[in-house]
Amino acid sequence: MGDKLTDQAEILYRQIHPTFIENGEPSSQPFKPTEKDKNLLSVDRSSLVSAERSHVAYTAAGMSSSAVYGLTVGEFGTEKIVCNSDPIEDGALKNAAHSVADYSVHSASQQKNVAKRLKRKALERGCLHPPASPSSLSNTQTGG
Image (cartoon, rainbow, N blue to C red; front, side, top):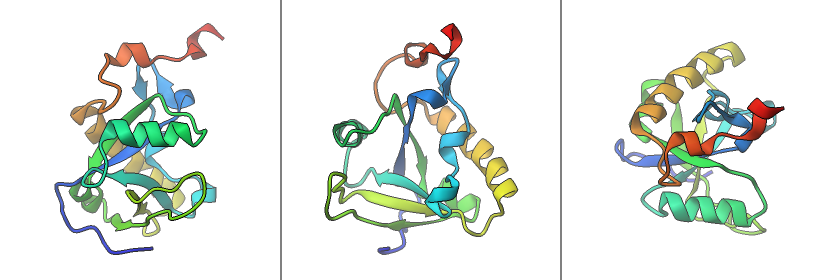
């Protein structure tokens, strides 16, 4: 892991998988690391890449994303989450902008509550990519 991110205003991009879009907006699940993530939520730094380029690179590596939302280093910090640069230097996911938000100070149940609060902040900022209305992000969950 690299250096601690210190610019409180820097936006960190989070890719939202299509299965986590509900009624045109992300659920709180993408704002919380999964068990396999070992308490580290993957994000991309806005100082190094645009939301669009982050999305293009992510999907070009074969992963799915319907939208990009963002939270600032400071917003993570209000939840006692430290963010660090964590460039990926080889493989299909090579990404100099990759960073992590470290949730390890929170228990699993606390992480769920933190994710709900961070989701609200990300929604206030709005979808950063694609520049479309949230309703266009709906997936086919409603149809079965």
